[in-house]
Length: 316
Image 1 (cartoon, one colour):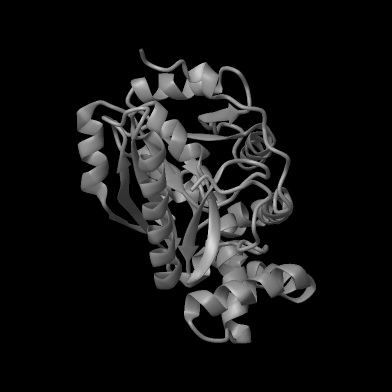
Image 2 (image 1 turned 90 degrees about the horizontal axis):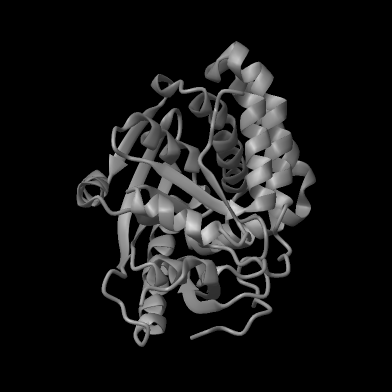
């Protein structure tokens, strides 16, 4: 008998330390930039962007310290001041560029795609799949592909607090924007996810941060032990769906490079083999995260102690 998706919903775990830090910064930065950005255009408004990035670079010592620790691992050397500033600037740039992407000014950017055939093959199957990303690059540029490409529908699943913040940001930038966001933590959340998948849509989730006391899987990222939440992958396994890695990498100037890579196919997984299959998928996801942290080190926006042991005991 197929599992009841409603039974997959659990209470939201106790909040982890990082929750809210990026979102507060993102909201404040975006509201500050949106007004000037649409009126001056991307080139002129980026002058202010450099000033804002310098402010956070200078007056956020905690984030600066964690950025240094991460970049040392990703670059394989001690990061210079220019590296650390570039990390902040890339973060600020992806937030700034949301203004244009949400307002469908796609011609402002040069967007290249790797793995488009994988997505097309999934669309042709008529079966929805999970997209699992990270706090890496721009999700908005991935969402823009869904709005421009016929047959590709992308929904985003996130907890209610974050969904509310995203909705308020989008409303401030473009009141006509109607994001397809599924709020997690409600009894009908997994039912809504299952419905979207049955309609052939892709459901996106972020898998690089734990929310607190929740099941995790121990992996190695950038040579150090790390712990990834298993919830997104377990949901895909229970619903017997494929999982595809996604990232919208910012590569300077107006260039974004979107990548899609296969992570797992849970279509034939059994309850007995589910835990092992989820563990293998978590290792694959970690390997891809490691790969793109090394190739595009300034795109992973982890300004907190990512490698700290979680409160929950690893599941494997």
